Length: 312
Image (cartoon, rainbow, N blue to C red):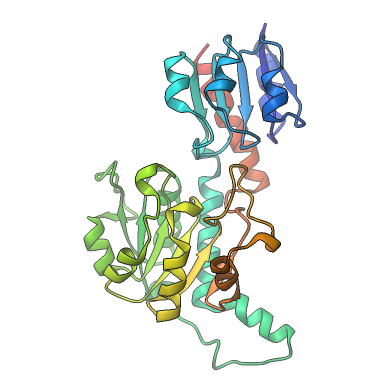
């Protein structure tokens, strides 16, 4: 019997379908790093989001492990290289929430261009500032998507349908263009675009991808959208960019200060930079929910099942 332990939230389609195909799935979301270490070594598979870090010690504690499924796209909480050395397949499901992320990014862009969040706050406070909240339309801007794996193309498709001009850059796949976006160099994208969406994975090379130098090199004042990982943006440099007027608006679904479980620091522990960021009207913040929809939950499970069954 192929025993699979599920330690994070996942649509029941995954366990139901795997059980029908000869697996024995158990769901227990009380596991911590330490309790998993002491779990009997009878697991063929582990299904996780970000409950704990899957490092060398965790991997060594389960010599029978054959696959690890990370529900979602980022696998930075898993030592992928060591898992491969041990013959363990690491599976992620970035296809599952690509449409959800794209829709959230589009919503953030619309909110920034039409001042929706700030206008809402003003009306609730009794202000009725029609002239101040006069915005611009989507198609009046040129969009640059950095990272063209799964989420980037999904966003490009929506923007293209709305009559927008879209450019894309992907350092690992420079020829990934389609009918929705024109692939260009990073330098050309920074010259042409005034709305930038980050759709890149977190790897060491991408740490602080957006920093003071990036902001200065942008040819036009711009709107920044980040739905990837918080540490691809240097928050202190971003705050300076907003205060200088070079960054017109920052839409952040992820923050530099998130921990391994993708949770932000409690407000009592916020550094000064985070406090300043949160105080700026030109910032829209959401709690790492771009990919979190009921529809995406099902698609994540479906994609995971398909990939697991291909291994057997």
